[in-house]
Image (cartoon, rainbow, N blue to C red; front, side):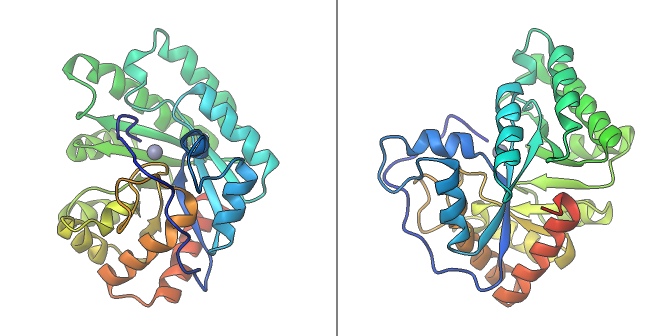
Length: 285
Ligand SMILES: [Zn+2]
């Protein structure tokens, strides 16, 4: 998530459907709907967004919370829509701004008990948007989320912006939960190998299709096929050739194809592997 990004123009046209269904492992439907208001081509309701995704073979979505209200919203949506499961958290850039982080974490802990909640996140560290004065609160919040994930046996969804070494340090110190997803993986092949060695799952976003992202494609190729996921992080990070326009789960096929090219995989086999990994981490739907 990076709320400051400026997206222009209409939602892109629907890509050619996938033959083997996949999930969108990380999306913000609340923000997608907000983005769609007053803009051509966007979904008006959650049901619309889910149907548009399903029409191109994206039949399962993970709705990701970034604060207490969006986490609550996600849980409700996951109960109303069988295609949607939720994760709950206070975002690492939100935590340092809260007057009472403990109260927010108590709310997240309560929400995490819900059977439609399959993950705790996005949480982690972000030294890009949070300055030195907020780092202590950010790390404490991260550690709190790790405990919640372990307590409830849910996947931990990590936001890592310019903080690779510290993410590993905190996880090693605290002890990682059974399932860890590196959302919008942004490291190189060495970091991918470090994460894979720990059993973490690497989720690739539209950034893997960006022309300058050679290191990211090498990292994807170095990731074991059973530890790979795909996500939109919608409405952000729209894949090529629509970079800069708003994103939504129905655009996953573009990122799947970029990932297939980067890893030298056949599209159908890649989709099958991603689906199996998604079910293992967040499922069954
Ligand atoms: Zn996100």
